[in-house]
Image 1 (cartoon, helix red, strand yellow):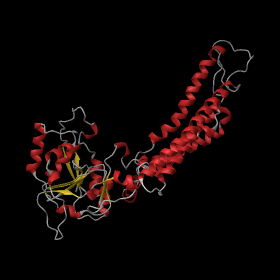
Image 2 (image 1 turned 45 degrees about the horizontal axis):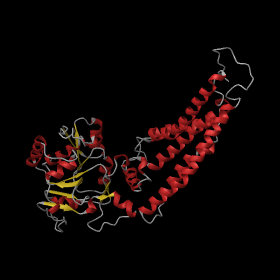
Image 3 (image 1 turned 135 degrees about the horizontal axis):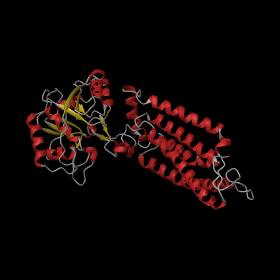
Image 4 (image 1 turned 60 degrees about the vertical axis):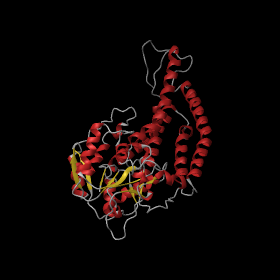
Length: 421
């Protein structure tokens, strides 16, 4: 089998399933050697080093840059040491063994779209004749609507929709020709989100694929509970690959956030006095500047932790670290500007409630779940708005207090002299 180097988790899961096949990784020459050694020594995979296939469609108007190297999939046809190859994408989630796929014909794929087959998983018979012809088609500019492997391979096998459905022969013989694979070999996660359960009657429910938005791929910690299946993907990773690479950074961030919370509590009487005296004519300008700083600091408290968390950490750990980080940074803004903590944390409470609501397992289907989330957001919006108003009002009062500026009637210091409280 061959698949994207990014999905080492799939490699280990296939090993656990005891698949009756070699595990082969097609790796371009710019892949670091330490990754290659890990795949070979730790995972028992065979690594085939290749040069990147030049993508002649990269200047198309609708071309997505993330598909620039996807034509390296064509090297699967050059693996002539094998009778059959099952090519896999990085986002496949295996539910059971699929060894019967090696009985399929020269080319077999699943139609997720009624008219276009999906290249996240397909079966092929390696052939140097086919491989060289594919490279020739790239040179002559075969039509490719998306500029990626999906469009090119779809154009190379345009009549697959007319082919018969694949049913593995009970005697284990290999079929000849091209076949359509049952939907159970590429179950689009979108189908699950509609019913919150699988109901694919045609073929075994074997492989889940995630062809949606790239920023909601299941390996990202924020994909769950937004998309429920993300946790299932991470459970497989936890059982196979683990999170040893991410845990040290998570531990460091946790210590930093706890330290921030402790320091802000102890330093509260002093943080609010860090400002300069100015003459009366500059007070309005200082007020505006401090208001802007306060609002941006609160906004940063909710945004910054999201981007510094390791993006492939376990979702529960990721969200816990995010909530801890945003709480810690909010405490800085709260103490520095003497703001009401409850109102500063209203968005924090709203996010926590939304996570609990989305993680609830008792919804009858995806529509009910979506309506519940939208209803919750609609009800929370007024509270967030009121909290923003309260924060601005409290900030204005704080700026007018003696702790920030000299009381009315106090003699002004000499020009150019600033006193730090």
